[in-house]
Length: 294
Ligand SMILES: *Cc1c(COP(=O)(O)O)cnc(C)c1O
Image (cartoon, rainbow, N blue to C red; front, side):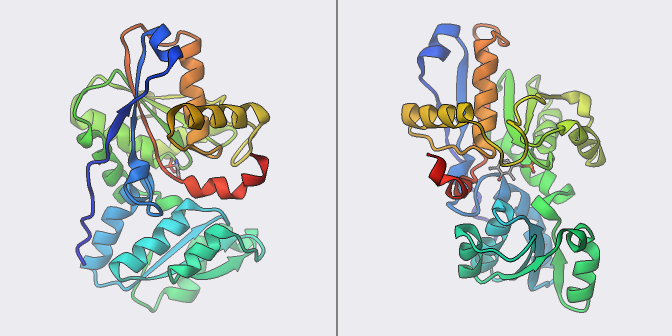
């Protein structure tokens, strides 16, 4: 099967009182609509990794993630769709949840490993897969190939924006956006909302991908306590946004990015007339891990 199911995901302009009042135009690049489970930036990140795997005649994808990992699910689903076997090393003790069940449904073999063993991913791979036709895929898809796919988000945009926003975990997606903006010689300012506490480490990670961190504005204070942590205020924002727009977001990634953007609008961070685009990176199954809070 051809690897090319890339399509130009739509851009939706938000029509909300706050944005009208402050004269800031906010558009949402709906990468969540690329695929229900190979969603958003996870497809962008896997695209060239899978193309290379195909070229190298590899038949197994091996990767890593936490128990609610959007990347594990995307890899499992992409493997089923494009004819690869998949294997996931899951951090922590054995558990089950809707995301892992979906991984299994798509045929992924799961291996639970304790946090110490998980830290040494190369060894896990080498001990189990070295002699096989397997590809090592970094946690979250981090790497050069993923960056290449993420840069294509900028190529998809049909107009030039003043600002582009995205939620960051490993920083690969925002590094890709900065690369895309640089390649096209745009004056768009690139913004990252780290969803982890102490997101300053992203600067060196982005640099290791060959991107100058000075070309990205990091907003470090919207992590709400850390990865997958959320507060009543964040949940209230997510709820109101979903009800006002019909666009689903969740608290782990997109909720924090949209919260940050709206908070900056309220603080008059933008100039009237500014055009802002925020990337909806998908990952909506994360909601299933906290549905009882809503
Ligand atoms: C993985 C993920 C991110 C973070 O992407 P990075 O490239 O790791 O920074 C953002 N949003 C969603 C929904 C994700 O699943």
